[in-house]
Amino acid sequence: MNSIDKELLKSISDLHSVPEGSFNIRKNGECLERRSTSDIEIISKEDKSGIDIIVHKGVKNKSVHIPVIITVGDLTDVVYNDFYIEEDADVLIVAGCGIHNPTGEESRHDGVHTFHLQKNSKVKYVEKHLGTGLGGKVLNPLTKIFMEKNSYFEMETLQLGGVTYSKRDTEAVLEDNAKVIIKEKILTTENNEAITNFDVLLKGKNSHVQVTSRSVAKGESKQVFQSNIIGENSSFGHVECDGILLDNAQIISIPKIDAKCPEASLVHEAAIGKIAGEQLIKLMSLGLSHEEAENLIIKGYLS
Image 1 (cartoon, helix red, strand yellow):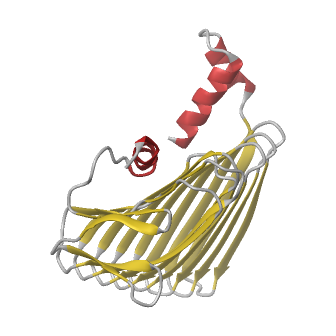
Image 2: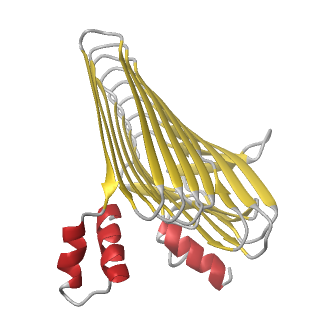
C-alpha cells in the first residue's frame, strides 16, 4: 500500500496497520488483502462481486474490518456483501469507503450490504465515507437489515466531506423485541448533494427503532433526509433530524410515520437553522477568527 492508501484507510477505518482478526481490504474493484478466522469467515461470492461474512454462534468481543478504497478515476465499483450473524454472537463491523480521485473523471462505489441477524445476536456497524482529489466522488450505500427475535443492531455512519454525491438507503425489518439504533452525521460543501432514506418496518411486538441524523451543509450544497417508519405491532419509533446551514446551502427533512397498530408509538422531530451568532461571538472573543470559530462549532456538532 502507498501513502494515499494508508491515509484513506486511517480516515475511514482508523487503521494504521493491518488489523488483527478477520479483515478484507478492497482497492479499485479488487481484493487487496484478506484474512479469515475460525470465528469470522470471509468467503468470496461465486455469482457476483462481493463477500459473505459469517460470524459464528456465540462469538464475543471480536471485530471485522471491510474497508474499500478507490484511487483512480473513471471507475464504477459495485459490491454485494452479506453478513450472517449467528445466534448469541456479538461483533463490531468496521466498513467505510474512501475515494481519492486524481482525474477529472467520476469515480463511484455502490455498496449493497445485507445483514441477517439471528436471535439474541448483537452488531455494532461503523461506516465512514470520504472524498478527496479531483473529479466526481460518488458513494451510494444500500443497507438491508433483517432482525430476528431479541437481536440488536447499532449503526454509526459519518460522511466526512468531499463526497460529490451520495444516496444512502437503509431498510430494516424487526421481529419481536428487536432493536435498531442509527446515528448519522453528514457534512456537505460546495455543490455536494446528499440524500438519505430510512425505511423501517416494526413488525414484531416490542420492536424499537431510534434514528438520529445530524448534518452540516455549507456552500451551495443540498441535503435531503427522508424517513418512513411503520409500526405494525406494539412498538416504539423515534426519528430526530437536526441540521446546521451555512452560506446558501439547503437541508430538507421529509418525515413519514405510520402507526398501523394502536399500541405503536412513533415520533419525529426536526430542527434546521444557521449557527447562532452568539456562539460565534463568544469564540471569536477568545481570539479565534470567524472561520476558526465556525469550524470549531461544526466539529463539535458532528463529533
